[in-house]
Length: 167
Image 1 (tube, rainbow, N blue to C red):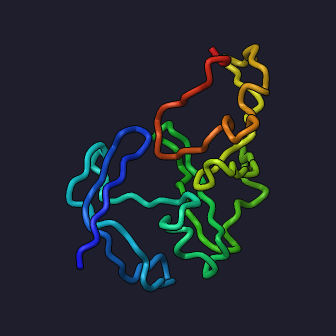
Image 2 (image 1 turned 120 degrees about the vertical axis):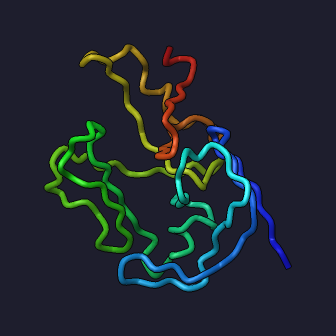
């Protein structure tokens, strides 16, 4: 039996096709029965050959690798200048954390919002432009009663959306 899917991301990029499972090999480690979508209709992915979901949802790669990697991963993105001599990296497993000596690295705890448990949230305290802190109360970015609010970390989006109080 065919199992079809369709998924639309926050930026309206869309993929649809068939769900399948196969053995995935990452470096020297192999993982059996990893579910993935074989997209036959994809829109808005700008020449990518694939997409790896790392959120907390049960179909994401990190959730499927699960206990075998201790539900842990990290990634470090090199500079956007293009001439950076450092390379970006993605690591899985208990030894995947960034070294504390990483120059300029800032480590933040990832928060869970019970209303949106698949997403990673951070505690944003403020925004500065040109070295000057904008007069926005930190409470504008915090979780509200009922689970609204909070700031989602989305490495796949180029845009930043803010609440009205931030303008």
